Length: 258
Ligand SMILES: [Zn+2]
Image (tube, rainbow, N blue to C red):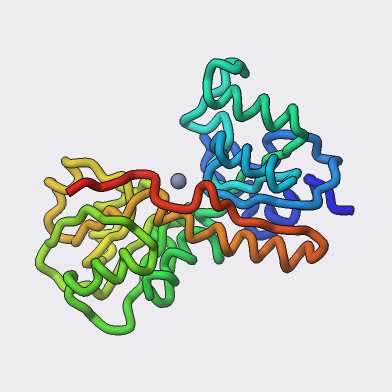
């Protein structure tokens, strides 16, 4: 029998809680740690549709990247049926579905979100931006024009579009930051990068940045790359478990109309 707590411990061996940002909320967040787990559903987020999918597939545990509650977003002040997060938590508890969330600890971990993102984009020998192990910087095998790199990003990450600025440099030394890493533009520019792939960039970040190609490839596409790796990790460590990847939450949330 495998318990929720055993799965949490195993995930913490890969992505220790000490790597998480101070404001974050990671690990076993919902359910009974002693409960037996037979089926795990892996998803970037725990949405109402994902909880429904867990119920339909008989999953007793959802392993997600984004915390289901009490992060910088989704503060829990109440658990009520008249808001979406309340419904998510009520439904999980009602059905005995637990949650384990591996967030900024998994961004920073070796082989975690940023290493996988770097690998997907052909960024070799990736090293963290800083001591907090945020993002990764490495080089492409050979320098390529930005016009060739953009479709490659779309194809590699399954983006349905991207936003970018062209600083006039070809792409060679590349920084990647899964999710919202706009705060690190100055840092990765100073570290000699010609291109930065991240998400959630603002107008003024595009406007004020002159020395590096900025690519906003979307929050979901830059982070969902971890889900198959998470699923594989659990399958290898717990061969008796059925590990599924969400099909209800498997593509870019934001649509582009042109
Ligand atoms: Zn994120």
